[in-house]
Length: 216
Ligand code: GLN
Image 1: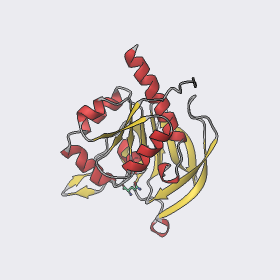
Image 2: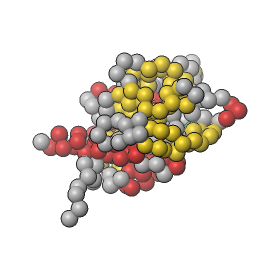
Image 3: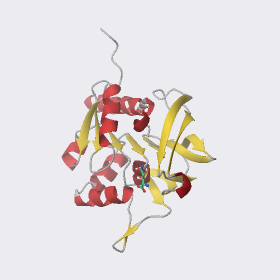
Image 4: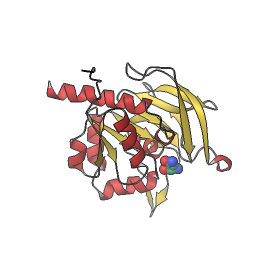
């Protein structure tokens, strides 16, 4: 019998309102976790980790209100749910959006939890999308580092300010593009588009620990 990895068989949600849900589900399966599409509060309550995928943060924030998920998500994050936010997901996880979109007179909201200020579409129009190899610093026991990841940036946000307790795992042009704070990890780029699974593996392990703590 093979050794059981901490994240084996653990239920990890992927917020499935808009964005690249399928690639994240595949990456979770590749690391032994069970991906669960999350569209309602009952589904959120059934998982021990969550991915906020890339897509369009204004659309996702609007749908979070429509599906009545904004407050349950804030409560789950405050309760220690491990979350990985990628691209638009990083924007949603950030406490402050430097340039929130204004839709019908209302400023775009974030879920918050991660002590950073983020700027949307910050890598400039001339390079809307690019790919590069990044060295990701180690994070906890389950994200051994430094590890090299292929990072895909698509109209990517950039972190402008990092609060206390936030670790920077990687930078591009001196700007943080991967950060971690306790049970929250966020990247400006899409790890799933290049088939990278190091961050999913961290999330599955963190979710496994939470599941074990709940049962004990
Ligand atoms: N620019 C998008 C936003 O503001 C994010 C793009 C992405 O997730 N690839 O939400």
